[in-house]
Length: 196
Image 1 (cartoon, rainbow, N blue to C red):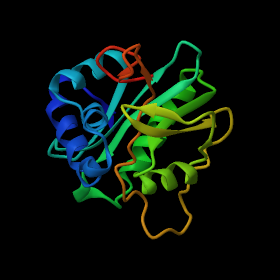
Image 2: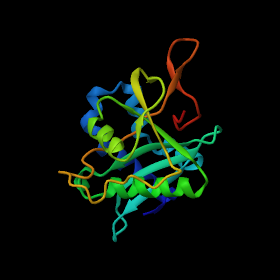
Image 3: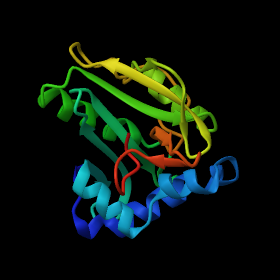
Image 4: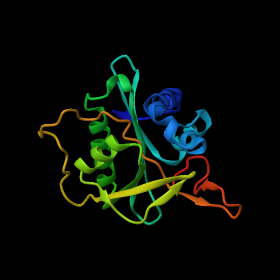
């Protein structure tokens, strides 16, 4: 587990595309493009957020997640994905644990994320990790989003040690909120990353 570098960008894009491919038909074209990124938007995310990657000993990228502190002081998670060949190995849990620990270390007291209805496994994963529905539903490039949040000022309710069939059998993807422009089309609130 480490902070991503610009050399990781192609691997991050491949990982996002592989993890979200099964959901492509359930996403709008714009939402899918904003979620899975391309080389340019992935580089922009690297500049605007702290991006973490899980890599194996050979340096192959196995998973990713990004986080940032919003102007309000709340932490925000985005773009969690695990290579589908590594589902169920605990990578999503380790990525989330690291992102939450870093945010806690940065003095962040509350963290939020947005996800979409098709990602049922990701929703269960976040709930197991103490996230609860919070705030109004939003729109993300023509898709309804669910906002989840949890406090960080207490010990992590990490599900380690509990019996489950699988630890992370989803891309654990997060979306972000988009707003409607005056023309009625959705667009991201921040340039290049789609982060609300």
